[in-house]
Length: 68
Image (cartoon, rainbow, N blue to C red; front, top):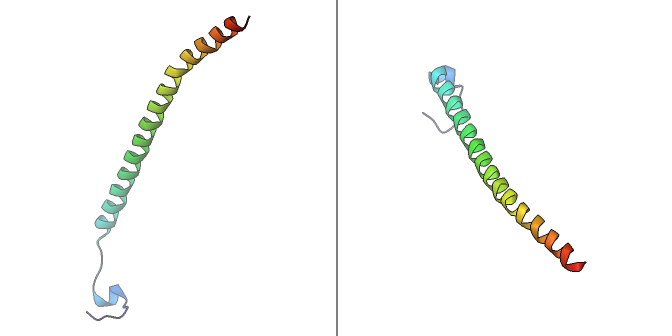
């Protein structure tokens, strides 16, 4: 091996296709997992917001009654 750029086929260093396929497959799985985690986090935030909304509605209704 030398420290200069060379044609990998001429040197005899060929990466098998299955290694590249496995790397792409693994990367795809990681991306899907990250997106699922993001969906879970977004859904939990949405649940918290929807739990607060009925309470806010009740408070705003109570304020309207107090103003009358």
